[in-house]
Length: 518
Image: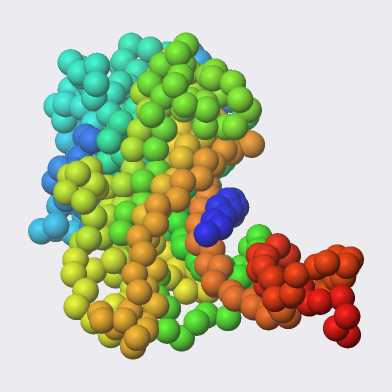
């Protein structure tokens, strides 16, 4: 039985479905102190660390009390970010936790900060300031640290998720240190960008985010005072790289309201497809009417835990070295979106997708559940009980996006994929009504190029089915010798005879007769 694994990169994943247009307004504070700084978010349908529960975060999850996002803000006076970069600490906000108040339907934080009034139009009376003041905002999600002080301390060595952030005394870019979990139960780290955001200024003008030198997307730099009803908006993107996961999505934005919507399809991600008698072709062959293939378990893993002493050659170069390992830690720059990989963090990982029929050990280690359309049932009594199974049309293997398989951008993942599946063919000749065979196949996968921030890489598992064929011919009788009579000279006695088994296919009997007999 042949099997094939094909890997392809999808387009960059934009993290963007719209939350409600939440406005944070405190009327009394506004009269006394000015315009409060307000926050709004745009999130994809699903997107943390073990600072929260494992799994994907969507808008509703981010609004839960255990989540929220962290903000770093730099007040640079009349200097723009390009001139002030590296000279300032996060002097306006340091890892400020912003949470959602479901009662009031708005994002809140404490203590509330207010826009500086020394801008071209400072208040409703039209007073003007002498200079312009700039504030730059950077964010990540989900929030990690002490909600009162913003500090993240006393993290265990084996902890995963967000394990460190830069201190409030450090000048320069805010940095988040992240580590993948060895058991594969990860959640996505999110990076707050300003892509697509446009702000209404108190002066009546407009401003948008901008990209810093070397940055991967627009961020909220050099913002000036906004109107009371406007807010600093963060478009949160996946900060990690994902292999497999949910299907592809199409993002559309309403030009008038700015509302972002995502339409999902059941393509892309981690998929399974059947190849029928194609001898190595990627896909094809006619799907048999009386055969079904269901999957019990999929295990994706790399068991090398020491870059100096790896035990498995995953990339197939017949050498055991650091290229057979995966770095599982790194630092994310919240200004540029760039990662610095920590090559010393080699810990291996295992990601298991299970069905009801999986072993108890696999169920214990399970990270996700198989799509019920292709999953092996817990029990089968008759062929008609089986689901549709894997077909010649690729199907996503996940029931949901519980624990996506993610990697640190900048690494070149290499791992094995092991699939255990069952092939059944309906056959009334058999006592049970069908034949059944369970098979386990393993294939190593290596990325030739480093994975990138926010991109999803599709992994397609091709399960090859080669039908059993028969060929038969009939061989003629092998007439290799024939009966013969020989004279042995005068005096031969008559009636003597012997049998011989010599020759192939024909038994020869020799009969001796008197010489005078013709």
